[in-house]
Image (cartoon, rainbow, N blue to C red; front, side, top):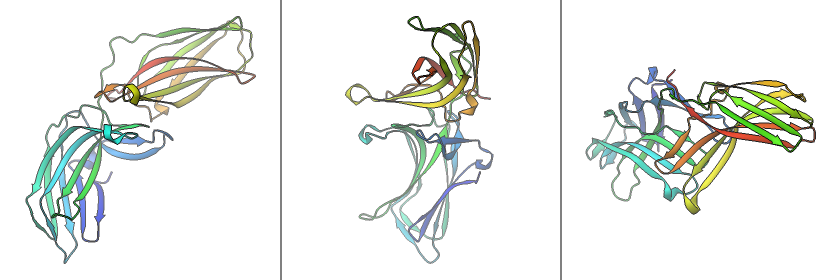
Length: 305
């Protein structure tokens, strides 16, 4: 990874470069699109109370100068409501003044540090909401001249201990006198690189089953009351059986979560703004393409290794 987060040309005379301390050795987090689930960005990764430090390098084109009313850098944590900007919220905001009013010429470097800054929540990129952390550099200009502002995103992840209680999931599905199955998953709480293990038992089969699939669905809930919005998306689809089963047959389930990198931990009521839940959805499709399904909520968490 390059040591500089980004280089931006501002007009023809000014550029801002932000360099994080230890950037070359720092782990990164890949950010995925919430709709296509394709990779859209890769950001330097920080822990819950880790110091964010580095330097800001401002370069003025040779022979030019820039009058300013002060330079500052901010560390901001924000929840952005993509459908309702007025409901967006900054839950963390810290400021460091880098220079008093004056005139910029040549290249200047400004070290900064946000020591042991608290980063309460994980980075999240959703359909209707986004939780992001970023550094904002502002060169304040004289009245009636727009400020020069540049933002540099970072990512935050929290690692959790393995849950002490992790019950199995057992459920039954029945369709009149046509179908009766039982399914069991070994665990209801899984880390993001875990394996879904289980079995499906066919106790009665009087319809022609064409295939059976296991899906992972994500439900993003944003807002409350009349402003509440729920978005459900299928992140994974895995075929566990092809062909019609017979009575008494047992089908094993083995699904590797690491194959679906856009999964995130379960988030519950983050700053009273949004929640993210995950569900295992067992789907049976008959020869007439009718779909029978049963789903159960699971809890996803991020382990340190």
